[in-house]
Amino acid sequence: MPNSSQLSRDRLIWMYTQMCRIREFEERVKRTFVEHPGVIRGHAHLADGAEASIVGCLATRQENDLVMPSYRCHGYPLVLGTPARALMAEIYQRKDGVCKGFGGSMHLADPTRHFPTASGIIGQGIAHAAGAAYAAQVKKTGQVIYSFFGDGSSKQGAFYETLNMAAVWKLPVVFVLENNEYQAYTHVSLEDANAKAGDPLSQKAKAFSIPGVTVDGTDPLKVYDAVGTAVDRARAGEGPSLIESKFYRMSPHGNAITVPPVPTQFQEHESIEVYGNKAEFEAAKKNDPIGKFRAHLIGNGTFADADAKKIEESVRAEMEDVVKFALASPLPSPADALNYVWA
Image (cartoon, rainbow, N blue to C red):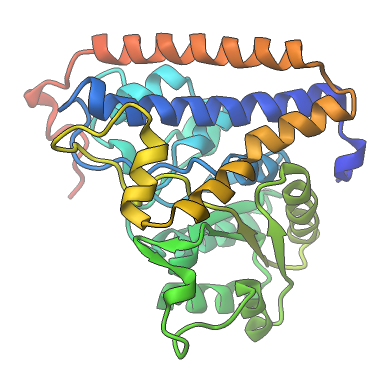
């Protein structure tokens, strides 16, 4: 796989565009709770701050490789090519949604684009990914499975059991531990010292004699290089790797209907209110992956400021249309409730 310095101009612009699309899509999800109360039922778990990590990872994949994230899953199918209209309609639980309105925010799936499932259970998807990797190994498909999960999942038994099995069987899976600094509402620094394996979390790979690497998850090119190495290893039959991608989650653990409604300056108020650390949040904003990558691409001549603005305007227009489409989509019929139930 070529390293990031060999990526074409078009590929770099594609990466920036996808990062903007993820951020704008999730901003529209966040705004829905205030502008259209009751449209989204339950919670929606956002990943603003993770855009560089998501795009850097997925830029390394081949067409048939499978992607299996946790419940913070909106960005992955967007990058894979699932229509944004169908994703938003699903989050709104409408009939035109990618799962016909029966999945919702945490259970998106688009098997036609090699996105078989997302998991709403902490750590559960790690084992599912290993199962898919075993199937790929037995069938000799040449596929690599991308497994995404949060830092909290690394304390689940499924994490240790699955990494052990994947290492022993040399399964073609790349485990991406997304360390966004918070487990629900608890900062990583406040964990019980006896329960914490230490920093970096990637050192947990040593227990299974597989590579473990920690990377700056706010830089898509650094993520691309680290994950690319792991993908090459998996595709060559050498087994799994553990990548710890570090970034800051700029929204609360889960967004839901708020009474009274939060102000329209969503992230500036919600995260500070939830986490109580304005200095930490302001530092994270200065390290925003989209702004950093934009400045990098302008600085190296990939595009000009005017070009970046055109991309951003196009993305805003796209997501405005997406919301209108999703709001106009009908709700599923009660008669369809049993159509997708298996016994």
